[in-house]
Image (cartoon, rainbow, N blue to C red; front, side):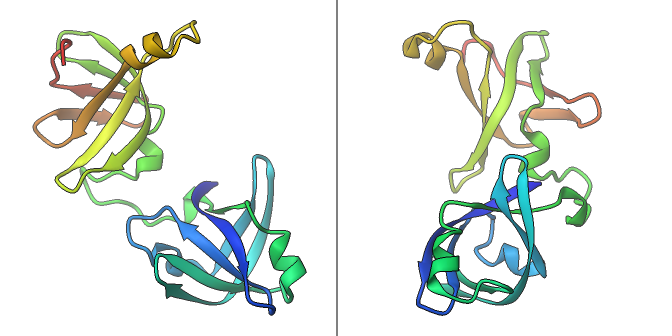
Length: 173
């Protein structure tokens, strides 16, 4: 399952839900007729009856959720889609979900750690790469985190099968 949003609240009295999407485009979930609601290993497939954009959230009516109580029971659940339902990306394009967990090394062989998340800055996407530590000290943990731009000049090779990425990035940055 690839989490693509979360239910933030019920909407109205007829079972509608407010969903905060975590997709590149706010209407990215509209490409799927069924959504999965749940968390962890507990997922339930739901058919989308209708959905629309309302400000910065999606309002959705799912089959079988017909009143405010049923909608309230969904609050806090994640919205996901099975990875195999995604269209294949173009060459040298990647889904963020496929990049998370890749081990990142530079040209000199320095192991920066693994990608834990990505975010947009407006100019380009940025990878958060963390080296695993055995400490809970917050200062040391921050020192083990790198922000690396996800741009062609920096990202030289992505090997999804080997779960690795080669970057042209200085160890001192």
